[in-house]
Length: 91
Image 1 (cartoon, helix red, strand yellow):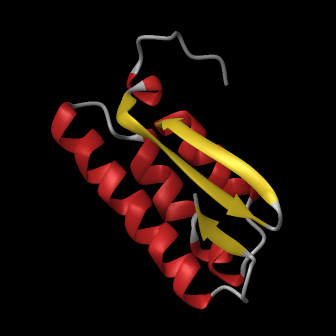
Image 2 (image 1 turned 60 degrees about the vertical axis):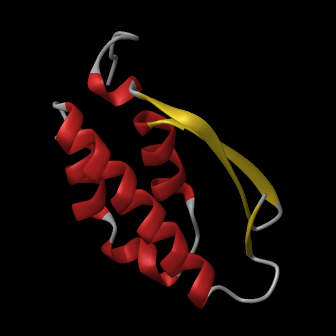
């Protein structure tokens, strides 16, 4: 899927979010980055993450983008709360 830099999927965060999953660092700076992290995480919750990806992809207005960011942060918190020690850490 090819998107131009000014589309909602590239809506930047005000700050970057850096997390470690399975010893690999992921930096989330845009909604497109968030989708990559959601799809690449190896965790039982990822089996249920397609609705989250749908919400992120549908975030076309600033209000929906803000909601998508909140959903991403909530999803990452859920991963962190249920991850084995050292599997998921915020940097």
